[in-house]
Length: 427
Image 1 (cartoon, rainbow, N blue to C red):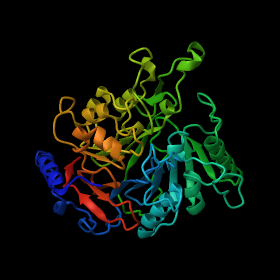
Image 2 (image 1 turned 135 degrees about the vertical axis):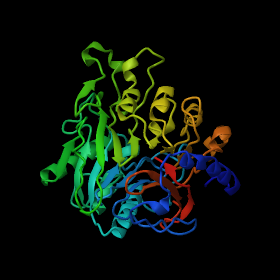
Image 3 (image 1 turned 135 degrees about the horizontal axis):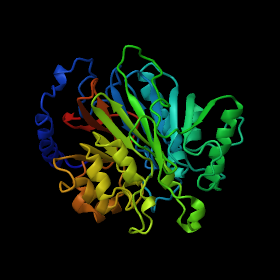
Image 4 (image 1 turned 180 degrees about the vertical axis):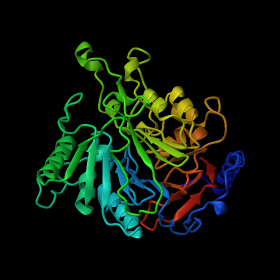
C-alpha cells in the first residue's frame, strides 16, 4: 500500500530541487544513452537495457532479497530470505502463500533475466547466515531433487536458476565467530557442500576486494561498474587499495556473552556506476551496549569506508540497533530503502534519523518494502512520510550515473506494474 496520491505529490514536489541544484546535471532526455520507456503508473516496469544499473529490492514479506543488473548484464542476488515467522509478527507472504518465498524470488529473477535475454545468475552473495537472509526450513520443507538439503530461500533459488558463483562471509568453515547449529544453517551448509562436490564455484567474501564481483561481459559495449567489498567478520576496508583493518579484539580476551554475533559479521558492499553509488550491509549494526562495547559498532566504520552514497539501505531492517546518527550523517543518501517485513520494522528512532535534516541537509526519499499495519499505526507520525510501504523498490541508474530514479512496483502479483515513480535525483 503506497502513500495517498496527494501526499505523494507533495513529497515528490519537495524533492525536485535536488535535481535543479545539481550544477551541470543533464535532464534525462539529454543523457547520451538508450533509455527504457518512461515509467508510467499502471504500466509494467520497463526492461533493463545495456548500460543501465538496476537494483531491485524484492518485497516478499519474508526477508531480504536484492537483485542487481549491472551495466554489462552481469547479475547479482544479495540474499534470498525466507522467514517462517507467523502472521502475528510478520506480514502475509507476497504475492501470497501458494509458493515459498524463495520460489517467488526465483520467478522474479527469471522474469527479469529473461527480458534481458539471460538465463543464469552470475553471483549470489549471502551476507550472513540467518533465515531472513538465506532461508528457513522445517520438516515440511521439501527435499531438493536428488539432494540431502531442503528447499527454502537460497536453495529454492538455486533449484530453479543456475548460479555461476556463491560468495558468503562464513565459507569454508562457518565457525567465525561461532558455528551456528540450527536447521536453517545446517541446511545451507549441506547445499554448499553439494556445490563443492559438484565442482561449482563457492568463495569466501574477500574484504577490500573490488575484483571478486566483476563484469562477466554479457554486453561488451556497456559501461563499467565496481563492487567494493567493504566489511565482514569484523574486518573493514581502509579505503586504500585493498587494505583492511580489524575491528574486533582477540576473542579470547572477551567474555563469551560479548562475542560478536552473526549480524555484526555481515558482509557489506558498495556498488558504483559512474557518479552513482549504493551501500548495503546485511544486518550490520552500530549499537555498542550504550558505549560499553565500542567495537560492536561495525556499521559506523563500514559507512565511513564507503563514504557518502546516492542510495543506502537501512540495515538490519531499520531496527533500533542499525543506523546511528553518525552512520546517517556519513552516508547522507538521496534515497533510503528499508528492507522491512517484521512487526518491529522499522523503529521510530531509525525513521527520525533517516528524515532528519539536522544530520544532513536537503530533502530525501524513504521507501520501505513491506510494513505491518501495527507498525504503520504505532509510528504513524513518521511512516506517513514514507513514499511507499509495500512493493518492490527498484532503483534505476542511466549510464554515467549522474542521475537516478526509483520505481515502486506491485508485489501482490507478478505483473510488475508500476505503482509510482519518482522524478530524477542528482546522484
